[in-house]
Image (cartoon, rainbow, N blue to C red; front, side, top):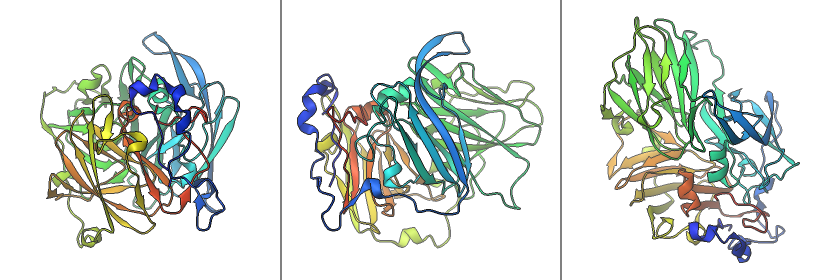
Length: 462
């Protein structure tokens, strides 16, 4: 089966020309004609009568003039960073054509948190070749789950995301007679564009109009590499969703800091008060507050308890997941060696692949043994948190694609192997991924014709 190949740590990246012997994917069947083997790029969605939404995204080098007057050399989608917000409806068939104007090293698009077929995951050297200048690639998938997601390049990801190749993707639920017409919403995508911290491309924060009593669903996206902690001053709030998945019966919170790891998304529900503004802010972005409504400025209270989903919301009665017995169990220890970030003491292609077959119930134990926060991101799937530090979660079921882990924490995760393919697992501090904290979850019988390395030009984690 395919194993992810990259240079072992930052020292090797200075000598990328020495990677020619790493062009093959370890254990990969080169012949696609052998019985029972299915190439990843043949796994696509079937034809259907679903409504079609088409978008074009052009990756290009652009000089952006920020709203503070500063000019910055960026890499953009459609001349913008972040790129255009793609807003679709649950059940839509999404067709997005990526054009590369002049990004010399090539570009791809990964749909972070969206469950797509293997061929559409946008991983250079695993699911496709990087799209070279003057070329194009069309992605097609179904928007199956409503929620807050984002997209970014997964070719030289730690570089290309920091240069600006990213954007928000919002999947709205199908309309129903029970929809709340009094609710509005807004998206706030925080990014680190080289040395500039931005929210929705601005250096000045975000202002959201709101009438007294109006409910605002605020979609917070952390596309940077570091954990951000958000406070809400001026009104109580609820955490409605994490990583695009609603929580069950979320309770009202106040004087609570919400930590959002790299790659994660949180949806907050806030009701505009009778008088005064609501201000959402983070010490990581002191000049980028989000202001809702008008009136007097609320008093900011330092500190406050950290939000924990361990016992937030309410359990689901007769929860079937809790009765399942795992078919496979993997243990992943996230840490660091002298020059690299590691999983089980190894990095990149040296990390043994987690191999499963379709239908498996999989238990994954993830431990953070040091080296900073490690937001654990799995492609192609949603996993469920079962326990933290040996204690079962007590509140709402929590479904994630990115798990924030801090040093000394251990989590048990449940995964249903229901999407055959070759899937990356990596730290979404993309600098950590570029230093070795990246591996694969592979399904038995799935192969790829693509290769990672300097000869192919496919470098998904550099």
